[in-house]
Amino acid sequence: MQKIKDLERKSVGTQGRTVPVAEYMCECGELFLASPYSVKKGTTSGCSACKKQKVSERFKTHGDSKTRLFKIWQGIKNRCFNVKSSAYKYYGAKGITMEKEWINDFSTFKDWALSSGYTDKLTIDKDILSRKLGLEKKKYSPETCCWVTRSENSRDSNIHRTHKKWSKARVQERKDWYKANPSLSRKKVYQFSMEGEFISSYDSVAIAKKETKATKISEVCTGKRTTSGGYKWSYDEPVKLPTTW
View 1 (cartoon, helix red, strand yellow):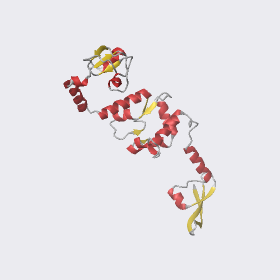
View 2: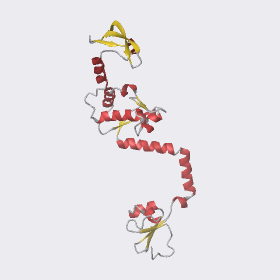
View 3: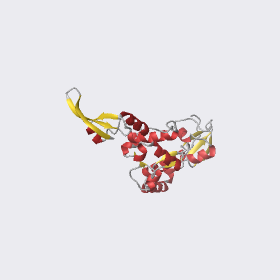
View 4: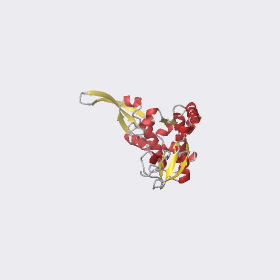
């Protein structure tokens, strides 16, 4: 872009303020008027036609705007930078961001995805590699992202959530308590027929479920249900056979 000549100051607004104006020649050969201040600042770099072309190229998606990969890219940006997104509080608000080269260039993200094993059955994950690298602030980037199945992603999230919730000391404390209180850790359960006749007893609900295939035993014992698996159940030892329920 080349400056041709300075022109008379131009009036702008309703208060009679004037600004300097000059004539420039764009790289395409087109002449246009602009403020020297905007040119120096970098907000004006060419004629309006070239500006539109640059904007179009910047947001061009190469025909992939309806693909799953493009939606993944948009989703990452949305939860990292859009404060109105319902997911922002879990990502952007916690400092999770995105690689600068990916933010405004889908093609760069796409090239990385295809070279990293992307398929339509996989989902992007930033947590696994971030933890291996020991990063406190997580980020969507080529170094911290990988493609995993939904089940792998869910399993990793559950394991990590459990590890955060339960420290090793707390887990061991819980194990020691159960060993010291075996009668409390397992509650004996008694099985009855629909007529109230005692059938059998089990050392725990878990064992009873396994033996009888009844899945709602605890709910019957606590009064939330009346039967489970075609039987009646109780935590109370049948000293006298129950006749009414």
